[in-house]
Amino acid sequence: MSDFLRKSVQDLDLGVDDVPIVLSPEFVSQAALVNWFSLIVTTVNPRKQNLRALIGQMPRVWGLVDSCVGRIVGNGRVQFKFRNEESMNLVLQRSPWSFNDWMLSVHRWFPNITEGEMKIIPFWVQIQGIPILYLTNAMARVVGSRLGHVTDVDIDENANQMGFVRVKLAWNFDDHLRFQRNFQFQENENTIIKFRFERLRNFCTKCGSLKHDVKECDLTFKEYVPVNLNDDNDDDNHDQGHDEDDMAAEDSLPSIDPTFLIPGLQGHNAGATSVKQGGSSSSVPSDLASAFEDTKLTAERLRYLHAKHVRETLMDQREAGLLEEVSNNATTGFPFVKRKRVSFEVLYNQAEAAEESAVLGHIRKKDKKSWLE
Image 1: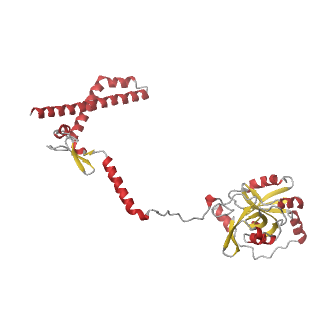
Image 2: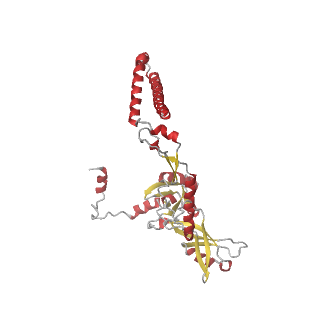
Image 3: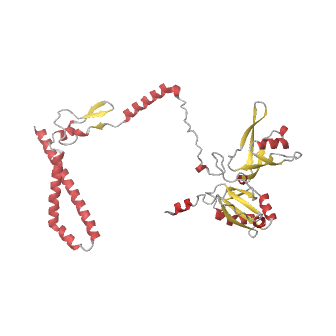
C-alpha cells in the first residue's frame, strides 16, 4: 500500500460513534486564556504570500518583534499570539495590512468566529463626485452602502474645503472591486461617483479581484471585430486592385522559358525563342538561340563526361603524390583532413573548368560549321 493510500484510509470515521470525552471547564478556560490575545491572519493570494516568510516579517512591520509569536494553523492562515491586549489592539487599529504587495485579512480570534468574518478587510474609501447640494453624513453612508457594509463615516460638514468624504467598509475579499458607479440624484440624470480605496495593494485590473493577478484571470472578453468602413466603396476598391495588378504586370521583368536554354532538351527550331511578359511574347536574338538549339548533348551526357573527367583526374593525382602526403601526415589527422579537402576542391574546380571548355568548344564547332554552310 502506498503512502497516499495509507493517509487516505485514515480519513475513515472509525470511532466517531464512541462515547464523547468530557474535558474539565477549568482546563479548557486555562488553555483559552493562553490564546486569548490572538490575531488570525488570512492570506488573500496564498500563491504569492509565503506563510513562513509572513511569520518572520509581519512582527517587524508592526514593530512588535518581542511581543508576539506566529505559527501556521492551516488553510492559508497564521496565528499571532500577543503578550497583552494593548499590542494586539494597536495592530487592529492600524489595519488594513498587506504582505508581498497583496492584502491580508487580520481579525481577533474568538471561539465562534466564522469563515466569512475572517475574510473581511476594513478599507477606508474616499467617495468623490457627490454634488454639493446633497453632501451630508447620511448621504455619504447611503452611497457607501451601495458598495459594501459601512461601519464608520468620516465627514466634517462645517469644513471650509471638502474634496471627498470617507467611509469605512467591511469588504469581503471574495468580492470584486468597483471604482465608479452611476447614481441618479435627479430623475434620468446620471452622476458618476468615484471610489478610492486607501492602502490598496495588488488586484486584478480585468475583473477587480483581490485574489489573483491579471495574468491569472479567467474572465474573457469577446474579441473586437473591426467594422469595414469602406463597404460602400467596393467598386472603387476593386478598380484600384485591378490598376495595381496592371502596373505590376507592366513593371515585371521578362521571364525566358529555361527549356529552350538547356542543351539536348529542345529540338531544332528554325524560329526564335519565345519570351513571356504579361501575356505578350517577344523574340530572343537568333544567334543566342542557335547556340543551344543545334546542340545534341543531353544532360545525361554532360553528367557522364563530368564524372569520367573527375575520376581520371583523381587517379592521376593519386599516382603523382597524394598517397605520399597521406603517409607523411598520418600522425596529425586534422592538417591532413584540411589539406585533403583543399585538394579535392581544387580538383573539382579544375573538372568544372574542363567541362565548360569542352562544351563551349563543341558549341563553337557547331556554330562555325553552320556559318560555313
